[in-house]
Image (cartoon, each protein chain N blue to C red):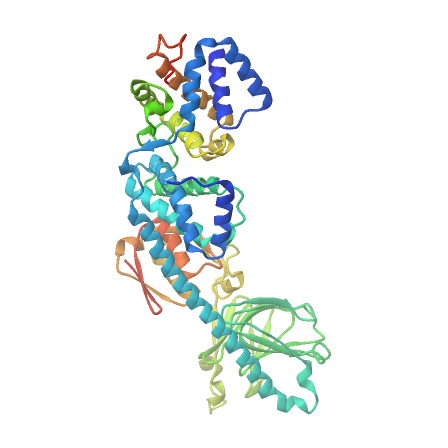
Length: 195
Length: 344
């Protein structure tokens, strides 16, 4: 999955308005997995989440003229995904997103420990810590760190106070810190340095 | 507490949410808390690295294929609807040309042709406008209102109608308002009513909401029929071919009572709203409304979906868009064969 710059996204929005299907594919490649994970977190079913992703991108195509005027497309896509996901929830008489019961995939830091100048043990410990974060904390961490959303956007998306988002991000980093700390009692004074 | 503050600030710094003051506060906290130095470094590095996930959490390839297929099929419909639009434009031009051709002769002598004002709608368009006397007219699709600019409002207010229109006539007892619709002449003095007189249809229908109207037919101007509020009169369009002019009125004209509750739109005038609203209706109830809205025939091959309930408003949406919107609520499939839609 490639990451797009703000300018690239704006260009794609323009191309979409000009009926360029390739632009839709580029947007899809950049966002489909992220949105899929988000939808899956809410509806707890991969098949349903995939249907939701179809609906989201078909909607983007149908509204492509309107899409060109949207300031922050990433936020629009997440909100659209949430709305469609909530429609699916309503179908099963479950009115709201339950932030304590999100289905989240296993995430890991996708890099070798050597690149970070840490031991593989430390990396494992960090990965464990990420996946042990409470669901609400984990999804906030994912949306902000990985998907690049702003605090206020995540607050709006999840119906939370912005202070809650701030605190949850603090908790996430603190837990990661603890996971490193327990492994490295000796390293505190002499940071590990590799040649 | 202070320790937590440090991580909140670090998170803000890494997500570019921190203010200058908060960055300064973070620096201060870090300098006071030497022990956190190494972990803090590792966390800063981790932040820059992408998160991976297991391959089974990749969205499957068929998802994009499905999107592509749906978009392709929509494109086809768009180009068809474009073709229809061009055809409609062509037909309209032809209609206007025919109108000019037909009316040029009789009017050219007194130069009346120049004084004819006409409002014409295409099958998809509706218009609402005011006549010089303030009478408000909603003109339905595929219809035409014409009147003589010079004479209108002098001794008589005369308009010609082809198609369907709703009239809200400005009251003026001294200058009668007369509508010529096919074989029917309608004389009014301040009322609101709907007239349906499409060429080719069997009947001419008039529904009255307010006031009183007087109806005469072309071949018997002395026979006057009065229509009272919330009554609808249906007159056969081929009444001129009825040889026996003394035929009992009751046999020719059918006057029926229409239901008019304040909170409900009359089906006769619903078209004026230019939208189709449905509120918690079953698909079975909704289907006939969609039939007349889109001019199609919806059939069910699946009894279960008939009972599903939908709410929504259709304004400019195409049939496909509407069906797709409905599909978001309950999953169903459909096939389109000419004008017949089968819901599966």
